[in-house]
Length: 151
Length: 414
Figure 1: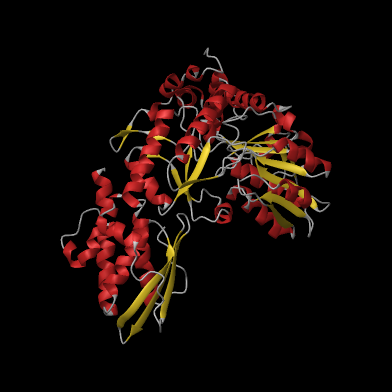
Figure 2: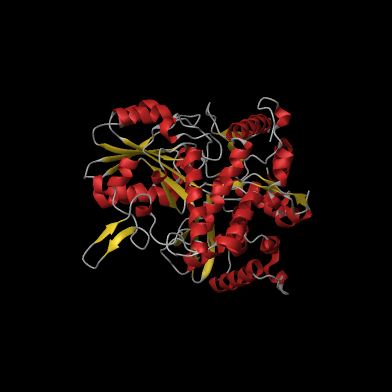
């Protein structure tokens, strides 16, 4: 298989696509929700969070999309469980940098397992798939009513 | 060119490929296999040269200047109109309106033909397999007039439900707008029967011919359609130019769509009078080089022969349908008996965008998504499809590569 494809579709991404974590999981007591939708490609995502005292106690998502968008949402929910809202915001900024800047950021290891998504950067048409979950998270944390899109 | 229509090997596809310079390139280390022709087709040298020649030697505004270049430009522009007329066998050049594309042609008919005619409670009929460009203009005109939009369903193989079509046509129906060939399913609709049926009820018919014109021999007089809309860019011509064909008596009675220069006879601040057909509908400076390029595309197609092109594409469709059916977990969406060279499919457990990315890495260009037909995709009960669409320059080797690519995608992602 082509190396470029392996770079994009890393095993971790393929695993999370086949068996997404926190998928179709609406936490009891969820008090934050946002909807993400990319109309051109059709990816759709609803994110639920339970936030108590500034901590993301639990979260889950529902929807459908390509392997990149599903894996990105799965990895994100896994990374954020138990994190403070402030930490989630910081991670959002780091992921945004990782996915959208041309050069790989120096401190890529800061994002831990999420770095498997960095292969997306060289596929301009696919970056929006990876960022949808993260922008939906922002909307949920900031209680935006409008559906989010990254197209 | 001399070749026999029946002999498979006699279609000079390799020679034709050399007419399309863009095809001769590597994508991600593989030769380009361009299988996204239903979205837009590539351009032969004849078209590229005609546009180049226009701008190098003959370009000026049309129908205006009293000087050599304007006369040459006008002559070439009007010659292109004549080529279109002959190509679709329209009765008169006055029935050939240059527009930007199929979308603009349909909007023109919606606003200039349907809107003045429609009363609250009247009905416009479309089908479940329409492209957004043959849905939204009608929704707009329905909102403006209080008319209703009715949608004829399709069956499980992707053919129109003719019984429902018959029951839809009634004395409140004012216009039937439908596609000749579905851009997702490839279905070729029985357009002659449908037009005959609609005319029995006194209902005018608009045909969206965007997918049909590059594949079929077209005769608008034999079809007896009232309007026929198509684009240059899907028939090897430039983008930004297209055609609205309309029956002369209908076009004569319609008010202009856009106001401006070129479409007037006299202008005063009290009242303007409009130019004769076709200029009444061609306000402003047109896409001159685009029209000339479209004329060159028609010459090119005529030189090869539409019947030979259709036969070649039918062979590609049969070959692809058979080869794709061998792939486990793949389902072709659209199995109509009469089909054009468009194959949409889904593969269990793999999203079409991931398929398209894998194929692109192997130099193969396909379309993935809803193909500007969201209601149809929803109707099919899928999220999106992958679509391979074939043109006169495609080969069975390219289809073999598509199949291998899909097996790779399955191995990687399923």
